[in-house]
Length: 239
Image: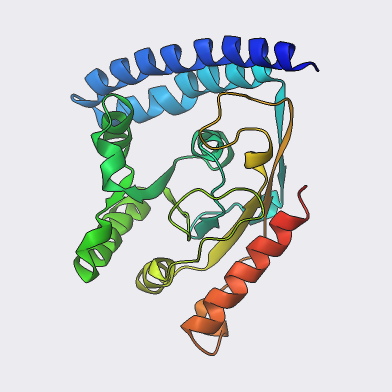
């Protein structure tokens, strides 16, 4: 595909995706003020499919999910974070799921407000132990409501092949929820790069790996090292 064709295809896809998503978020926010349950059902069952599947077709992107047998209730998903792509895709891959995200994202007009009403778990990175306790408190509420928790251990997006350091907050969350952790590798940056207008056609792969239990390791450092090793090794194979 020529650069001109790729640019035009990306332009059409973005002109469809962002305006339609903004209008959908606005409608969901209004509904969510009266009934969060209705808002979540509307988004998951109808609006997300309309917006996201249309975007994928326009971009020429397909999704392959490997290790589906590891997508189960009562686990925490520890996902590599390369792009905004997975923040949209996970709604369709892991039903009824929410993210742990930095609270500043919930301040973004429409998008952030919708995320907050949907039930995402905001965390104040500068609040230390207080933030960890608040995260666990909210996570327990989501689990009680039958929702799955997704956390990005590095806390930020990384280019494919890049590592920015895994944070120990996931250990604190897993210990307090008493849940195993399912590592997730992906390659979204190769097609939907951070801060890029271009959307390249191809396949984004989500690789779910066997669950890990902190109790099976000698200590937290050993667990974190192995978690990082498993995710990064799997990511390296998704080129």
